[in-house]
Image (cartoon, rainbow, N blue to C red; front, top):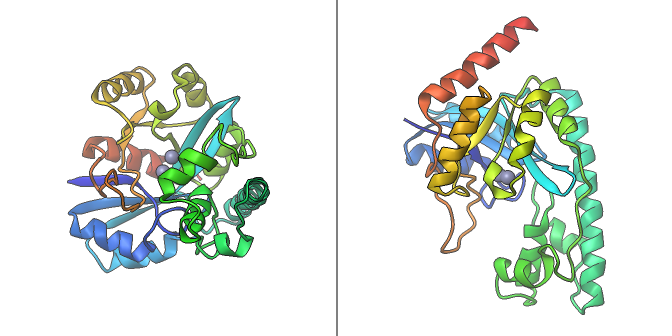
Length: 277
Ligand SMILES: [Zn+2]
Ligand SMILES: [Zn+2]
């Protein structure tokens, strides 16, 4: 049973529309799929409609970026009520911050002779959540960079000439946004940026799981995070973080899966909390 609890669509920085991602998942034999776009739930309705035509369970989700000082965290929110007004307005604020950041990057690029307009970038972010991959794609289109990866390596990545930091949301805020929409907060790919010493704090603030199984983790890291999950009584989830980016290193949907018994714990917790409301 394949349970991929972390995929992206073109509602944020994935390549494929939600319905296509769901179809790809069904064809890959996935039974449970969580669409978890960055800072948006705009792809969820289309994904649910596509999943209902297939034998596939769709978990509405979101992935919110936040920071503890310089350490970045991505917090996944599972089983969120994606129609919740509070959630939608909180996410709209995060999207405004993304637009502001895009303008800063555009002006930094123009100082080094790279000319892009906001429209050229926004047209690539079809459902409105703009990110650096869209800026990189616009650079490739206009011949400023050979590839998205090269654009990050030479211009957009941290420490590079057009790098602009994101506005920094606190993890307590990200967790609050998810919980208020009835969702279950889970720390995504904890091995990507380190800061393991912060995990007990995050658990205190309300994360219920750790994404121990991730393409970003080596085998030893998976074991390490499974241990932390066990010690803190957190659910150990997994997902492919599929974006559909087509290069040699691209990640296949369903390549990383959540163990069914861990997914059952997540479902159980969702039902318990829902019944209390
Ligand atoms: Zn992430
Ligand atoms: Zn992700």
